[in-house]
Image 1 (cartoon, rainbow, N blue to C red):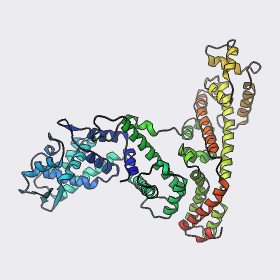
Image 2 (image 1 turned 180 degrees about the vertical axis):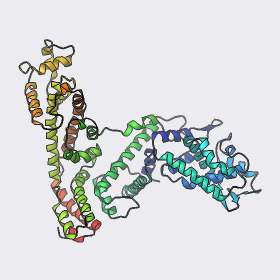
Image 3 (image 1 turned 60 degrees about the vertical axis):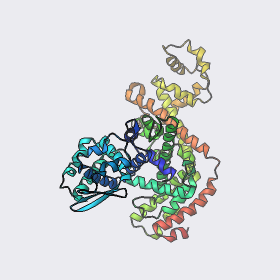
Image 4 (image 1 turned 90 degrees about the vertical axis):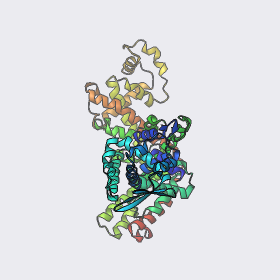
Length: 528
């Protein structure tokens, strides 16, 4: 397993599951660690990668073998650390008699309908798996699945049925704690590609725009084992999730190394409680649409759609600016091509779709984003008027953001004569007196009133001071709109120096070539 794949295992589990792994890693017997690193790592990998079914079959056979010597619990919860020598000694006296046989480090158990063998060196890992099952499912549930294996008349078929029952129960628990198998296959495909490209020690810093494009060129036409990399947008999103998992895991590992627990032997997870805070950053667009945006139309649906991918990518949009614009331009062209294929449009129609594009070039998209940013400035001005009119203290932080360079300390002498119990109340009262307020506040409030009166969107026709719900929407929504405008400005500024026209020309040929391979129309590329 590569270093990056190991990191992904760290990130691909819930805090609750991590807590269980940690508890098992910290188990001790007679003052010694019950398990070593190899057993814990094997348990984590089998669980997170969902490859535990063969191990559960082995475990069920081990329980059946232990039941030949009495209660199977004695094998797993004795008074000695779990080592291969412990298991060898446990079975030694019984081997060679009845249904058990031991030879060359292997224990075999015979049934009326077959035989099964398990290495003693494997049993420590199986014991850790048993502890995990009891921890997450409960002893009674585990014992119910295994009770048939206590009978002397048990068969290999009985053992297989018990193992399937445990696998089903474990799967049900893990549904809410590890990513779906398809998502993990995608991660492994991306990790393999990056390993071949940058070496086994690659990190998130090695994933750049050119790497994402190269991956898509290679995998776009693959059938994919359920892994859909056909569209460039799907590929970009897969890399976003992959990067987020890598970076979250790197932060977790850094925490573990900085804050070791005990001796460090066998420990695999620290600061479980902090995990949820490591990677969770608020998406202001998503928060706005889910909350205040339902009451006040700060953004219309078209504007939301234009900004959606930018804010889904978050800070990664700054690291992958070209990939973002490739999605906005060629991703939408590909979406129309896909719809065209579904509608049965022929080669000529596909040719026209690919040739016309419809989204313009990279500069067109950047210009649209700049207009959106400027439109949000007008929305914020209108929101300022609504908040000031309602005498909301939330207006002050918005005003200071819009009045760039304004030194609020000049208001201090003026506030002494204003009515109000708090400074906020006095400041808001000052804003209502343009003849006394210092510049640029009078002009700013005039512009704010004009913007409010000029907007015909939902929420801007009301009177927030007389509608508590409307006022709450402005108070909670305005900071999110500020964050959205700031995010657009930051991205445009950070990517301003790039040679977008030349890049678009080169990308256009690349995308048309891949489109021709995906949709089976060589003329799409050849005739444009």
